[in-house]
Image (cartoon, rainbow, N blue to C red):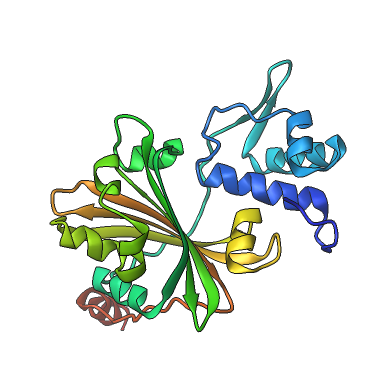
Length: 252
């Protein structure tokens, strides 16, 4: 999980991976963190390294130590600047046609992270997970994990996903996709992402998270994608709206 050959200290690598798990909802608010011995065994490092990594997250406010009870994930209200843009689901489908797919796996009845099960509005935290590596010019540029409700997940096969974009398959099955919310931020690559897109452990990658809904407002897929920063670019065209024109007039 961590690489002692990197200049980045081991405790900082461990802290980065634990931070991602918390931010992604793999460790939910109020959940007790694994013990120092368990984490040391998982990451193949010393307890001192784990203690230092956990201490870093305690200082950040992600974790809290409770005497005699353990270390717990605590809620926080990060001050993150957010900007909202409008785009097209059609653009996402067109992008999929430009890339090839390999290493497609589909797992049904997978237990989903609490955050994702909640976003998909599932009664039970079970659904279908589709994992695939996306290629451009015979080189990996992205790793995508898509979670779907069980009734939609059964519509998918590896053969269909190699021929068509996942959203196209849903549309062909009569699902009317109308909207999506998407967030983009940087992350550090963990072991699975490193293996999928051929980057070093702890490398900075572009992380995209998207929730797609149908015209009835039902969430139909939760998508996580990790992009290589040297092989992917996200661009937005910005126009000055009528509200912006009015602002200029007021400032003049």
